[in-house]
Length: 316
Image 1: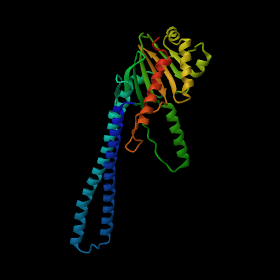
Image 2 (image 1 turned 30 degrees about the vertical axis):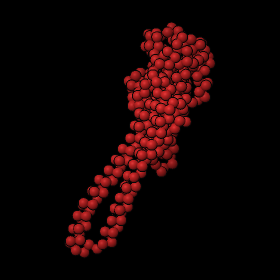
Image 3 (image 1 turned 135 degrees about the vertical axis):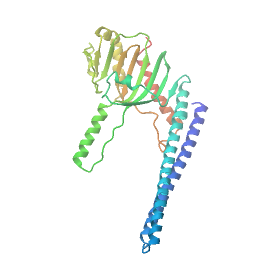
Image 4 (image 1 turned 180 degrees about the vertical axis):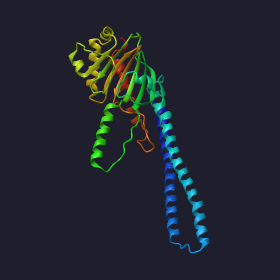
């Protein structure tokens, strides 16, 4: 672990503490303002408005005081949000960037960009819905140019209810959405040879509506774990050699259910879809603080994903 990364960890901890202090300061100010208004309302409620002057004074007080309070309350809320955003940007742009740079100075990290939605929707991996993609890492590993991005289906909102039956139905809907939507990582590898068609290998654990002719490979064990769809039968069998299929099965065994693997050959690229792979670089102001241990965890997870390039022997 380089001294530069240790310095960045210290800087991130300092930034987190500063942002947390700012957040708490405005939180306490907004609470104090709320109780001040509450006290004022209770005090006015005890005053008898038996003269026109008192009534006018109460009206003018409410007309002036409450808008001021509301503006102040909104200001506090805005300052709290600003503190959260400030730390989030520092964490991504400074800490995470340093973690990746410590692994390999030639890797590039783009915290706010990822796989294009149009490209993702070509393959129908998961239910067709809007996606958000970020945390893109690009570079070269074992001679293969790659791009790794986090991809998530757009957030869904569920209404709360006290009705047990409706709550049970909502819970079923949540599980169903989690199964149908894609959330995980996509690793794109640039290959030397361009394919003429599209060959899709889909994990049987993954919901996918593929338009194309389904292929039956000779490897019975492989077909137990995956479904294969191809535009060109001959090319599919050329790409999915017995050795390659065994390597895919080996990855499935080694992940122990951590994520489900699907693969697509198209043009000069191999797309690896890792559904269920952890969302690495997300944080909030009061989440786990930056540390050397956390940096090592990030690096270990990235290396694990990039090791797929070695396991599949894409350089051969």
